[in-house]
Length: 295
Image 1: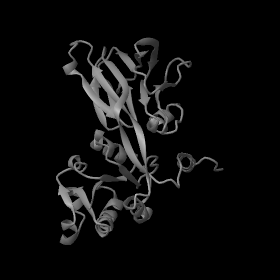
Image 2: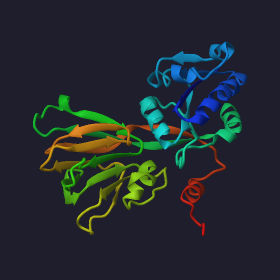
Image 3: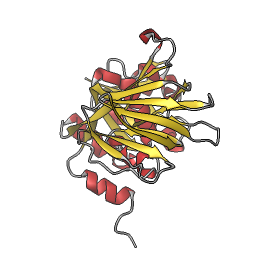
Image 4: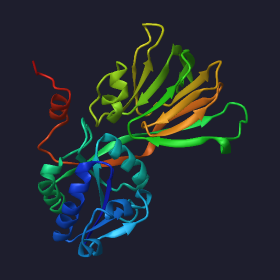
């Protein structure tokens, strides 16, 4: 019996159509779906509900399952990765959004994708994860620090004030530069096709062992994105004359930071495992999603 978690945005019309069909397809393959009460409400017959494990919220879906299906866009997959955490539970992404760089299949191809997974005709893409820690720079008590992890990126932002902030960049405790900018993006190879790309950063192959540091609208044109080794440790000292500062994790979690705060970033001890089929390469995804070669 395969225990399969399902995470999706119930507000999407395609999800309402897909959930009953997905539960049926899993049950026909001896799969036991686990899903939230919001998604279970889309099942019209009691027999389908009996085939499922229904939990209160998405937070519990990833507990005690063999793999998870994430239906939506990249945001849904990032949420799923956060819920899976360091457990190593594989994720199959089903794209019902616009870009879906990390998604492996579509609703139309879901039946074939499930067959491949149940027959173990897939590989696992092990994606590097960033770990961050914030310190307020005053108490000196590590117990007051906040720790978080990101599959895509961690962003330090000036907030709603139209004023640049100064960021002191240190790598492996060696001073590198002071950056005057709207903020800073520190991304994984997975996140190199997200906000970092929009800020002028490079595209990295997802299996690279690297971290990208990209200033947001720097006031000195020589301040460019840097590609660091995955083993490097980045420390950012935040200097500003206003308290409206924000640190954002994967575009989903916000942490308020204060002037004088320090943000330390490094590779996490765990990786996120994405289910991949070998007939579609990363470069094929790039060419399709970014519409390269089109006139």
